[in-house]
Every structure is written in C-alpha cells, then in structure tokens.
Length: 471
Image 1 (spheres, rainbow, N blue to C red):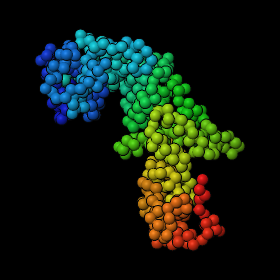
Image 2: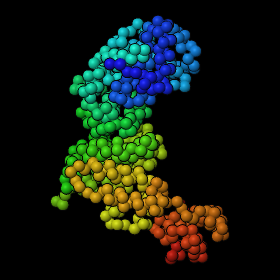
Image 3: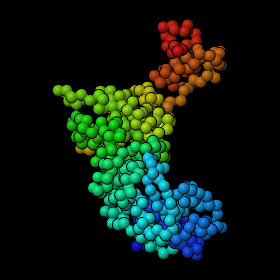
Image 4: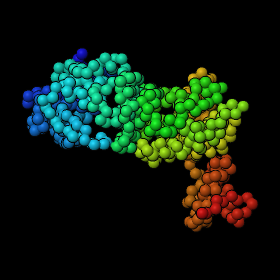
C-alpha cells in the first residue's frame, strides 16, 4: 500500500519530502508514524505530522535539518523537535522504562539502531503503530495495525501498554472516533489499571476528544464500563441501572438513554469547539440528578427535580476534568433548564416565559441542541420535539434572543437622565427593571422609561414597587 503524501497535502507534503531527502543523504531514513498514517488510510486530511528518523544520532539529525528553518525542541527529554512554521514534529526512535507514577515517570533513551518493530512496541495501539516511508510512500505494518484498522478494532501493541494508565482513556476516545470495539485482551489489561498518578488535565483532554471528535461516543463509554473504569467516574456509574418509565423511555435505564443522546451529537456539532464542548458536556451530564431523585410509585417512575439535583454532580465531574469555569457555568445553566423547552411548548407559554428561559439558560440556541439530543435518546418513542424546536426558534428569532440573553433595555445612563445618582438604589432599580422587562411589562425604550419614571415617583417599598433589597 502506497500513500502519495504530496497529493494528500500539497502544502506540507513537499516539506516532508525535503526533510526525508536530507535525512537520507545523512545516512538515515524518515518515516511518518501514528495518527497521520491512520488518518491518510481512512481518507482524512491530517492536521499534524509525526516523523520518526531512524539511523541518525541526535547531532546528526540536527545537522541534517540545518537550513530547513527554525528547529526547536518541544520534548528534549524525548528527542522531539518541531520544524518552525509547519505542523511537523521530528523525533528519534527511543526506548522507555517505567520509573514512577504518572506520564512523566519514564526513563527515555533514544536509540537510532532500533528496528521499526522494536520502536512500534512502545506505542499504544496497533492502529497508531503504522509507518509510512516518506520517500517511497510505502506503508509498513509491523504489528498488524492494518487488519485492526480494517476491522475497526483497538488492540494494544505490547505489555508496555500498562505502564501508562492514560491509555485506557485513549482507548475510550479512539473507540468513539473510529467506531471501533476494543479487543478482549486489551479490555482485560485495562481492568488491571487505575488512574493513580494521572493529572486531571490529561483526563480532560481525552474526554474532550471523545465528545468533540467521537463518531459514536457510546462505544467509548461502553468500553469504559466493560473495563471497570466507571468506578472512577461515579456520576456516570450511578446512571447504570437507574430506571425510567418505559412509556417515555422505551430505550431502558438512564445509562442507555445517555448513550443514545451522546450518539446524536455528531449531527449537531457546529465546528465551534467551545460551543460544541458546552453542548456535549450538557448532554453527558443532563440526567446526573436522576439517580438522586428517581422514585417508583403505582403511577409510574418519576424523577422530580432532577434538573436541579444534577447540578452538584455535574459540577464535581467537570471540576475533576479541569473544564474551564466559563464552560462549566454554561453547562450547568443548560442542565438546569433542559426540561423547560418541552413544558414551554406544551403549555404554549407566553413571550415572557420564553424571555425567562433565554435568560436562565444563557443561550437558547445551545439549549435547543441539548433538547434535540435528549429527545434523540429515546428511540422507539415518537414525540413532537421537532415541532417544539421550530416553534421556540421562530419566536426567539423574532425577539432576537436566540443566541443571547435578552439585553436590558434600561441602562444606568438612562436613570442618570431621570435624575438618579449612582449608588445602591440605582442598582436595585436596574435589577427591578430587568425583571419587569422579562415579565413583559415593557418591550421598548419609551415604555421602559415611563415605567422607571413611575417607580421614581413612588416611595421605595410602596405597594406597586418591587425593588430588590440590598444585601
């Protein structure tokens, strides 16, 4: 099998070939390895390139790269260099030995004399241990990765896999991204590992890849359950076996519902990583409150108040993954309001109710995506969610609140014109004005000003005035 790198990437391909020729002239051989080869074989355009150069020492490699532009170390302990201005990392084959906990607990020694097979054994999965000779375009498969890629199978390269437990989460996200199953022997190996010594940042990075790149996220989470790693994510483990009323959820328990919801995400992504991550986390966390609130009665199975009950476990989950505070706040607002679109449509609620929802959820457009995923997570149940989405979106668009909270009509400068001086009283009146606006007491500047004028003519705390009390 041959890959035409210049045809695949006309911009970076010639640079890769230039580097490969320079290495060959110095007595070495340059190969692309890992995700770039896997992506090329799947017909995808790579976004970055990992190159491994055999047969050259580190000084010889740097000499060969002289004149190629800025070459700077990005992993000096691992013998890895970046070619300035290009998405190219250039490294030497190396041996690794576990010396302690975490991803930094390795002793690394570069060895230009390693064979391709020996170098491949230190990698995580066989589908990431495929090499491509840059000059010939030949794909070299030392560990059977081509067959595994064809059969959509994730299989570890060697027993060295167990030296880095983060690879369990890498298996999770690769299963989702490649729509693959994890080999039984790899699952068995993962069962004996724990996340001890791993940083939360590395945890979060793998979860983000699952949520942002996974074609079938359910496969990744199903593997996590099979490998016994749900115990390290108790908010998810609690969903397993949590019952739902089959009249509304024929798919089964909350765990199965969540898996179906996550598999709806690829069609809802907007290629805006922050928004897509916000929606994906909200979908993942939206029913975290059900295990805390579910009750079985003669009338059926209910989970009253699960939206609010889910905020604490959702917050704990995201904090452990080091999700940014901004995204956490946006996710929690969506979790807290994810049931309200259905109620609003069912009751054909007023414009005031829609304004309230837009204010509370932060972004109605994102809430609608969560709502759509939630309803897609009930295969076999036919509802009118599509019509509800259209009804809400059309009204929100007319009110200009589809992607923002209702902007306050009255500002501090407007109250200054009316004779108020800055201070606590002005702040109280502005908050009261915004509440009145949400309630529909005024919808334009003229009526807002008239409302404020009326409030200023009344004694604070009078019968027709609802001013928030300062703390």
